[in-house]
Length: 205
Length: 205
DNA sequence: TCCGAAATCCTGTAAAAACAGGATATTTCT
DNA sequence: AGAAATATCCTGTTTTTACAGGATTTCGGA
Image 1 (tube, each protein chain N blue to C red):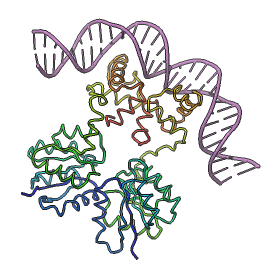
Image 2: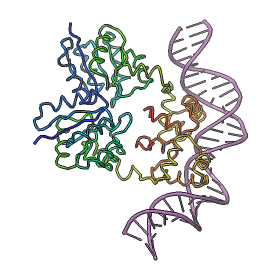
Image 3: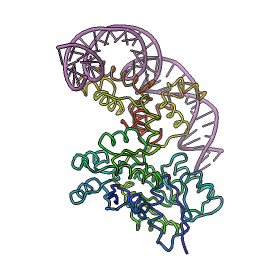
Image 4: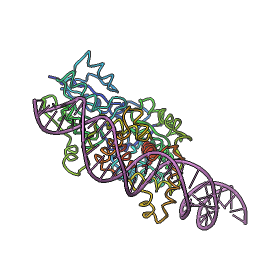
């Protein structure tokens, strides 16, 4: 039985590359492609693929949003995240939103096929590098932030002082300072420069 | 006369996509590909393509550096920047370093061929979108940093204080402070948090 | 309902950064 | 050779952050 495959990616060359890689594969049925989330959703109203390869960073609706949307309407469809970036936060968000796996764009044909076959069988597949990314940054490095901490973090990154953030959030400056302290502890950062650097690398700001 | 073409891109799927797009083209001779700057330079010691399609963001040596390197040793080779990002600063830096053009990864086959033909004829070609990027919506320039400023910036991002950086670089803390001030002015940042945020977004740290 | 995490607020001190306003060598490029 | 850019260093003051060591309230989940 062929696997009905659909692709969403805003880069024509990547679509072409994957099509070229998979065209001789007997057990893959190429259903088509979309270059943005909206077209993808429109396509799904008419036909239902088994597996969707989905780029994470796209103009307009991101892959992360699209994944959630597709999964809520068509829970049976398996989604594989596709990205150039091997960022823990992206991988995590896709999986949280119901994706069956994550493949990097520098993956080999074999890896891609493995991921598709795993997805078809309702299993999870992560690129070797993606797993490494999860491992190496795991537990220790990537802190879990509270809602308020994220909010404060964003304003810090924007360049606001504690007092300015306090005014923005209608809380006292000492509270902001406490959140800042906790952020620093969670990230094991010595100062705000290191904090923002780590947060930025983790895709949190 | 066929155009001898070589590709450098760390994404296998993109290489495959371009190969697939161009394989029927009579006037293109596919010389091969590399997945990083070092392999590319090694290849050039043996063979000399006319045009190189070069990804801008690669692990290790970036396309921007590689472009400069290639042009200094082989001024006759024409280089086309290839990227997902339509950032003014990237386009500019490639052109500054001697590139003949810039093509986005979502470009069509026709656009890619036009760019290659222009490059072969020693002309410049920019993706329509790249031109728009240069023209319109004021994507703020990356500030041009000096060698020392970059160095200081990296240590700041790592979480070192001025004094610690001073000891590391064998200069006085006031000098580090001056570099810090200049960085802040160049980035139009209010404080170090905003500085690191902007630098990180720009891929400088 | 109780627990624990989250969010709020406080005092105080020390350290660092931000800001102002300089000066002087040393490269680098024209 | 001369100008411009870069890198170096200085003295201050003010603002902000970093650190220590608390406390109370709120709220969601077991």
